[in-house]
Amino acid sequence: MPNYNLNVNGKNVTVTADDDTPLLWVLRDELNLVGTKFGCGIAQCGACTVHIDGVATRSCQMQVSILDDTKITTIEGLSKDGKHPVQEAWKEIDVPQCGYCQAGQIMTASAFLSENKNPSEKEIREAMHGNICRCASYNRIEKAVKVASEKMQ
Image 1 (cartoon, rainbow, N blue to C red):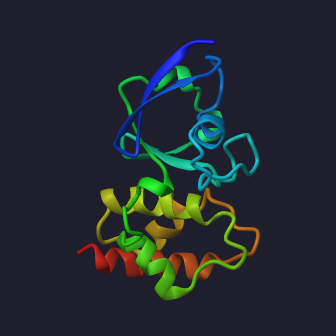
Image 2: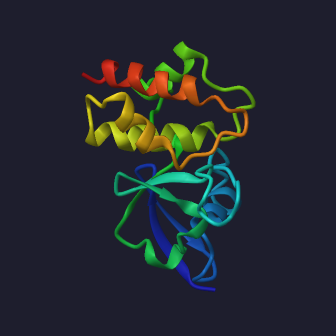
Image 3: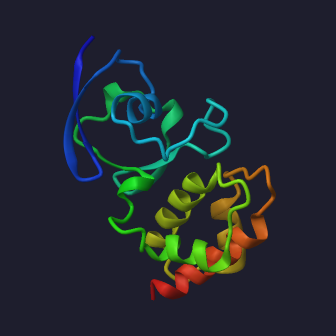
């Protein structure tokens, strides 16, 4: 198996994996970064969302072999102390029920807000629509994204 040099959460790491191994499994199984969750395995639910060069990306379908010269950020690397404005808003609004999808929700929201500092309700809904929450916490998620946007201004 080949070695891959990755930049994960600001640290350079070398992993050994088959070239078609999804990033999700490298993060979870090789690097023990288990905040990124397996949901559907077909990039439809958003539970596995990470940032690749700042862009929210589904890691379950991203092959490790194409990630040279990219910056990968997981939920563990979003903030050293859990004080990212999106994380703070999530706590303030008490968003999670079961919590399983929340890392992906937070990663999607934080990438979206880095591009759109003052989103409308419609823009928030459109940005977040691809992340599935089986507990149906959508109203609290949308409210938390709005609160986070206000914290980021």
